Image 1 (cartoon, rainbow over the protein chains, first blue to last red):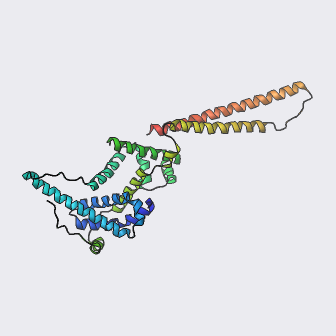
Image 2: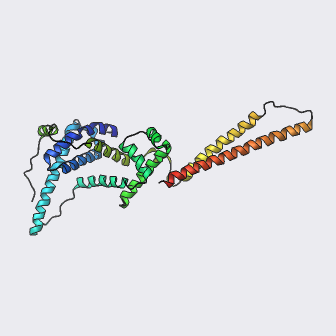
Length: 167
Length: 139
C-alpha cells in the first residue's frame, strides 16, 4: 500500500479510532497515544495491508488491542508497585514496544527543531503542509533543485541526530 | 499478578464506540496523524537526489557539471560568433596585403569573442560556486 492509499484509507478513521480509545482508556492523553501507536503500527505493516479485506475493522481491532495492552501494562505496573513495597517481585517487566515506537516519533519531532532554519522551513512546507516543490519555490524564492538538496540534507541530518542522540 | 478481568469489546461494540459523537475528539487530530505519516514516509523513502549525486563528490560534481555545461555553451557560442562574423566572405584576394589584413582582422575578432566567452564562462562558474556555497553554508 503506497503512502497516498495509506492516508486515504486510515486518516479518515482518526476520529473513530480516538473515540474507541477514549472509551477504553481513562484519559484523553492516553487515548491520543493509543491512536498515534495505531498509526505507527499500521505504517510499519503497510506492505501487508493490501491483503486485508476490511481496513476499518482491522484498524478498530488494532486500536482496541493497543488500548488493552496499555491497560494490562498499567495493571502490571500497579501490581509491581505493590510487589516492590512487599519485595515480592521476581520477574522484570517486558518492554512496551508500542511506547518505544511512539517515543521514536517524538524524538524525530524534537530533532526537527534542531535542524538549520532553511531545512526546517522546507521540511515543514513539504511534509506538513504538503506543498509541491513549485509552490515552495515561489514562497521561498529558492529553486526547486535547491529545495530537493535541502530536503535530502534534512533527512540525513535527522538520521544522524537520532543515531547520535544529539537533539 | 495480572489483571485478567479486562472486558474485550467485540466489533459491534467497537462500531458503537466509534460513532459515539458525545465523545469529543481533539481538534486537528486527523491533521496531526496525516503529518506524522508524511514524516514517517519522508524518513523511509530517499529523495531522488540521494540517488543522483554521490555524497563524497557531490560538491565538486555540481561545480564540475555546471562549469562543464557552461564551457560547452560558451565554446558553441564562440564557434557561432566565428561563423556568423563573416557576412560577406571572400574566397580570393587579388592584393596579398589586403588578404593578409582580412585574415588578421578575422583572427583578431574571433580571438576577442573567444575571450568574451571565456570571461562569461568564468563568471558563470563563479556564480554557480557562490550559489553552491550559499546552499552548504546555510546547512
